Image 1 (tube, rainbow over the protein chains, first blue to last red):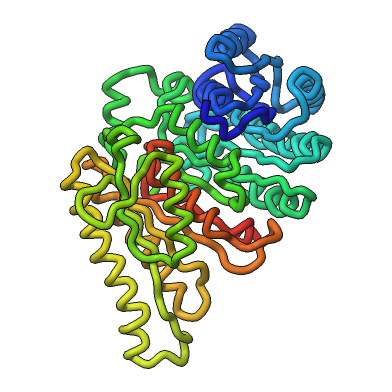
Image 2: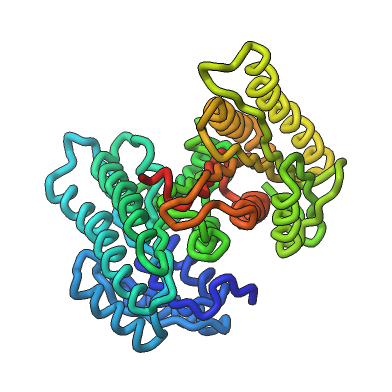
Length: 255
Length: 181
């Protein structure tokens, strides 16, 4: 075990599938003790079983990220069962694809609750928990390339991810003033082949190939590439990095 | 894109002071990358160097010898790095390290390098060559210290290796939160 995150306790929201699931596995492989959270209990049990089978340490805690009371339970259970919190990965997110004219207030509100309010609670309550541990820490916001550029049919999603960018930078500055400091950065994935994408566009190889052809690296993004970037942003390899937007998109945003 | 196995990876590092080169060497050792003088390699690192003078006070010669020479050197070094990666085969990674400031005439150099990295990323992506840039910060940052050679080296190692397999055309800012302000 390489152990870039040895014995550090990290909460990963939305850890039952997609980027969150691969992240939980990678963090555990780097020696972290992982609190996997989410709404899907079956998925939660399976990710914990997978991590334990590989010699890692993890627990699952049911979690609606838009509810402060849920966050309180997540943090207190993680502290009790795994130890003082070092990091939070605010990964849970919703996605709606509709033209602006068809996007309802309810669509916008529900995305805002998960993507913005959820991330806000994660960084706010995460800071408190990390301060209790007393050793400094790091928070990663899983944003999107769509938090940096527009995408037709994703007004509400782009708005929420843009909000996360501002939240990240401001929290980073406040976190830098803490003693010891807490770092906060946002990760901006391009098109990553996850249930979030396939549930909207279909799980179809021709579509995956089309996304790959439209990406400078000519590949489709996989969740494990995002997990590697999140390990970097949580580890001491990025000790002087805070408030940045790290884009990992196969080059789509370079143009 | 297939990068070759860790144990057999080599890197050419161009430019940079003694301290930074030592830090990069150390970070590469941990990742199983050996620094070679020249020839076929999987990784090419270019640390930009410049003698920038003031914006208002530079003579035409100052501009040509500072900004002009630095950007030209980066461009030509990138070409030789790409040739070295192509001759090794199997794709690879180019990493630029920009000057730490926009002050004096470093701004156009910094941004020129940044956009050169993006142009190269778009052009070279289809053959599995990734190009990214490290943008260090200058002076004491909100995090309470300055950017160190070890900070830059850790990011160079990340950008050079499989841990950034899907990352190209990206900026890695290492400024302790300065640009977030």
